[in-house]
Length: 143
Image (cartoon, rainbow, N blue to C red; front, side, top):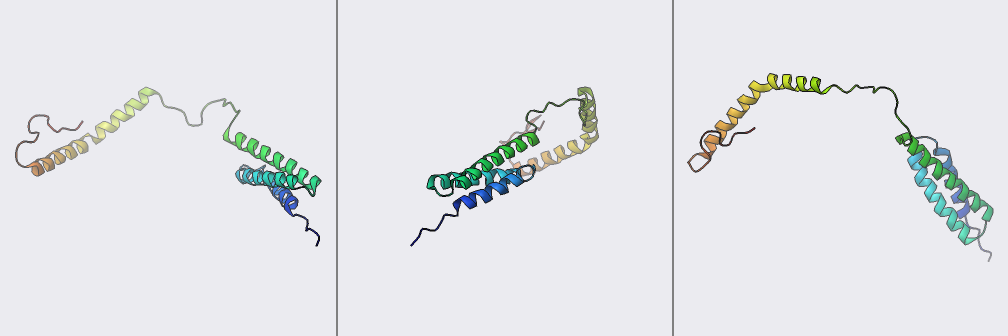
C-alpha cells in the first residue's frame, strides 16, 4: 500500500498565508503573530519530514515574513521609534494652579469633613464606654 502524502506542507502554507494577509492591520497583528508562529512550526516540521520541500520552504519563508511584519506593525502601533514633537493635546497645569484648585476644594468641603469627624468621634465615644481608652485632648483624632 502506497504511503499517503502528508498534508503538513499545505497546512503550513495555509497558516502562513493567513498570517501574511492579517499581519498588516494593527488590530489583527497579534493574531497574525500567533498564526505565523504556528505556521513556522508546521513548516519546520514539514521540512524535517521531507516530501514537498519547495512547498514547505515557501511556507517557512512566508511565515517568517508574516511574523516579522506583525512584530513591526505592533511596534509601530505602540510608538516604538517615534519621537513626539509639538505641544501636548492636553496641557499640563502649572503647580500654582493645581495648588489653588486643591485649596479651594478643601475649603468647600471643610464643613462636611469636620461634621463627619465629630460624628465619628461621638460614635467612638459611645462604643468605647468605660475608661481605660484614649480619652483626653487630641486622643484618637484623625488628620
